[in-house]
Image (cartoon, rainbow, N blue to C red; front, top):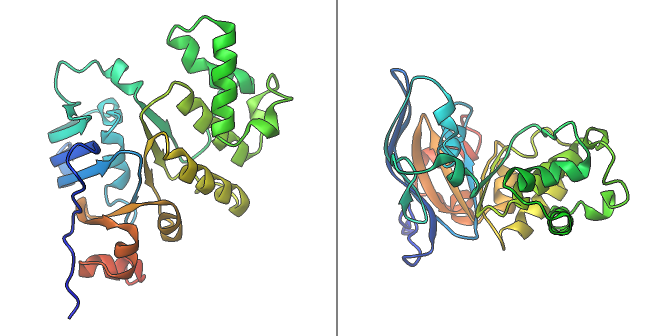
Amino acid sequence: MVQKSKTVIEPQYGLYKLKAKNLDLFYGAKQALKDVSINITANTVTAFIGPSGCGKSTFLRCFNRMNDLISDVTIKGQVMIDDVDIYKNQIDVYEYRKKIGMVFQKPNPFPKSIFENVAFGLKINGEKSSSAIEEVVENALKKAALWDEVKDNLHKSAMALSGGQQQRLCIARAIAVKPSVLLMDEPASALDPISTAKIEELIYELKNDFTIVIVTHNMQQAARVSDKTAFFYLGELIEYDYTDKIFTNPAKDATQNYITGRFG
């Protein structure tokens, strides 16, 4: 009989970048997250999987307090970055969000030039040196694997780029302000297979500099890009473990049923 490992893997103390403890979230009277606890290690890729409406995107948004923007939301429990509870009253949300980059399902470049898209956050944060901005823009575009494709057209409209290029531009814009965490909500779901492959390669490279959490409906994508996978169902975190363990020998029957297509 194969001995099953613990649901939650506990790496050495002090390596955790993100934590949640006993997290409940309500939209009015409806409970969307139920007693979720998780520890996410720095400089890894963590994938959230599960059927539509299971709470994975809601949970992702807890890490940059985007749920604050929704009326009638109640949150109980703890969400932490670097062991600081981000839902305590003394947290400066504006300053906190500088640490958290966000990439959405649909590419959302600003109707500005390629250069201005990446430079926008730097200028908002008060950077006035043209040479410093140019250096950061170039480095961010290189990290986003886009520099070679756009370096001769930096002052052309970002709206003229392909969908895959626009998404990589949005990633460059997010990382230009040097966050420590990058949240990605289905970043490749609207892209063609070639663009999706480029985004996946990029995610693998970026974990050297960022802690990455990605929501995806594509289980093959989760298997390819993530170090750990968390499976959500009906607002609960059912199982969280190393990705190869989740996909080859999950501890929970519900996880096995989902990854084999029996429901979802």
